[in-house]
Amino acid sequence: MKAVRFHEFGGIDVLRVEDVDDPRPGRGEVLVRIRAAALNHLDVDVRDGVSRFPIEFPHTLGVELAGEIEEVGDGVEGWAPGDRVNPYIMDTCGECRYCQTGRENLCLTPGFISFTTGGGYAERVVVKARNLIRVPDNVSFEDAAALQVAFATSWHMLFTRGDLRAGQAVMVNAVGSGIGSAAVQLAHIAGAFVIGNASSDEKLARASELGMDAGINHRTEDVVARVLQLTDDRGVDLVYEHCGGELFQKGLDSLAKDGRLVICGGHSGEVVPFDIIPFFRGQKSVIGSFTYTREEVKRCFDLAARGLITPLVHRTFPLDDAAEAMATMERREHFGKLVLVP
Ligand SMILES: [Zn+2]
Image 1: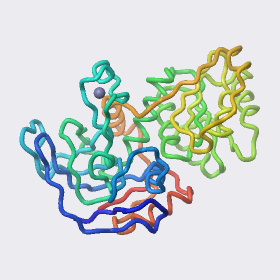
Image 2: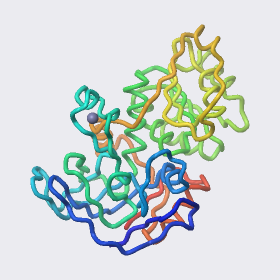
Image 3: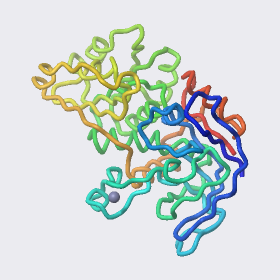
Image 4: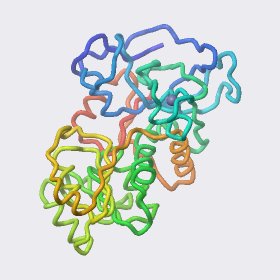
């Protein structure tokens, strides 16, 4: 089969489209014919060697994929060739205290697609049957590949960690990103007042079409002043943060009293100053969030199957053009996900 691999860390030119042996499913595993694989910013960090994940060479990128089962290994029940599937991004132990208390995203010995299996930038991959999630018939492979990380991460942040309720005000940072645009959609159908920010008016216009109630251009406008204006000087109940840097402090300053800031990333600045006095006087909370559970993925697939949310696929590329796809992502001009179609 074809796989996009790299043998050393570096820029786009380290990627090679190579012929490799087809993987074989072992006991409890299935062979999946990959029909779509979505790109994530994590892929760039992994390729550059700054992801803080241990990598073995040669490495095949791609944590998010969808396809159909081609072959079933021994001992697999409930799955058959032809089934349309999306593997849960993690491989959890099922036995640790977190797995046993509904918090499998915090598993003490997790594996991850591509790090402990083959990756999605390939024609086939072997995954454990216990990690498969069924893709509804009316959700395309491209949409399925683009759904999990964006929407399940958003679900976990907004509802599980952030406790967002109908009628509350939420600010979504960077609405042009995959998880930003997903959060706008989920917060909108949950009945929240959705304020979003982005680096361009064009991205804000797209987010408005997805249900954003008010947009702020964080390059040209004062984010905190605009939030106060839009909320009768109260501030927002929840900030959805995944950027770090300046937007982290602006998010804190935009919170109402007793407000929560939920954060899952810090690409724009991983270590930031933090003003403690208004933080505790306003009884604010900063809440970390890491991935999501497979139940949350299933809920998002249910919403997609009912047409209530739409995974945004900006553009698809053949596997041979994986380098061009990554270059497109690094330019950050896209709105929605970039998807490889092997
Ligand atoms: Zn576990």
